[in-house]
Image (cartoon, rainbow, N blue to C red; front, side, top):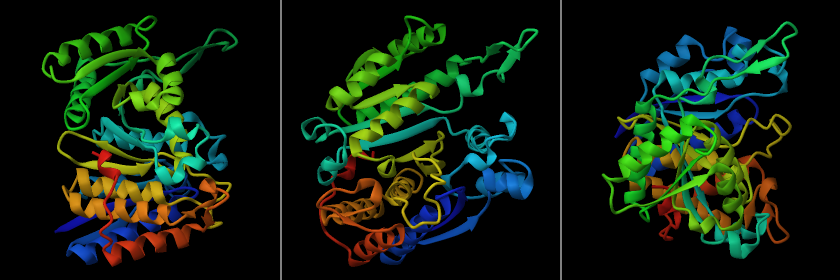
Amino acid sequence: MRKKIAVLPGDGVGREIAKGAIAVLKAVGKRFGHEFSVEFAEIGGAAIDAHQTPLPEETLKLCRNSDAVLLGAVGGPKWDQLPSHLRPERGLLAIRKELGLFANLRPVIGFQSLLESSPLKPEIAENVNLMIVRELTGGLYFGKPSERRGENQEVVVDTLLYTKAEIERIVEKAFELAMIRRRKLTSVDKANVLESSRMWREIVNEKAKEFPQVEVQHMYVDAAAMKLVSHPRDFDVVVTENLFGDILSDEASMITGSLGMLPSASLRSDGFGLYEPVHGSAPDIAGKNKANPLAMILSAAMMLKYSFDLRTEAESIEQAVQEVLNAGYRTSDLQTAEGITVGTDQMIELVVQRIEEGSAISSIMGAYM
């Protein structure tokens, strides 16, 4: 198989972790007889510096002409004073919209070997296996641009906008995932306050008639936030709108002990996807060989699974990551008393080595479905 991948390293630690994903894909290609070609382009702050826009047209063109996209991270204090439409994060929002990537999948796994790294009690974090499905191209982030009104600009207005079709397609995707997992769907909203949430709940109930095998639960977002850290094993598939999904998925990262362990996939209906770690650009550790590359590496595994249907190859990456963690290796964000602290480059090398060795260890990562 030959595939072309657009790589958008972005800002901060993005370049360091993107290097890890490419090295892993090269090892997978060699082991399984595939060819993954990569081409680089700018996004975020790096694109602002080079092209005066967070999402250059040439970046979009490359992505549209590729089979999938790998993205590192965007943003940093360097660009904090720019107008909102020129902020690095606008590049990320825009590329999702331009490529039609409406479904963001964020798996959360309670790694047995990382229970000490989690701030949650081991008996709460262990055996957690859930998938957050976040709507990605509508809601508050894409409504009418925020305005400051009044004579002294003392009133701020942001608009939360959803169409019925936007809600229907993300809810259907969540039901489809629930069908191949544990057949339990939790829909998170704020229907006691927001009209958009009331429509969301109505659509979930209507769509549920097409999936009678799936147990459906509705939950207000504040209750869901509390339950994520008190009884996370109760969740299987969690579907919610853009803003709520953004916040809840970051909160859920504490189950694993670090944002550096959470990959994500942003998909459209034809299987094309953009794959990125959940964490940000971490400018404070950029260039210091301290970043955790595992979320980026696991994002590459999700790419193989969702966009290329290479499940065995994806599992080889997941198995390699699991084996490295079981051996006690940790980047500084996962440091424990018994762990062996390594830098970004060494962690990448350890994962690549295990892929090349073709370890037969069984993977617990099948939940990345």
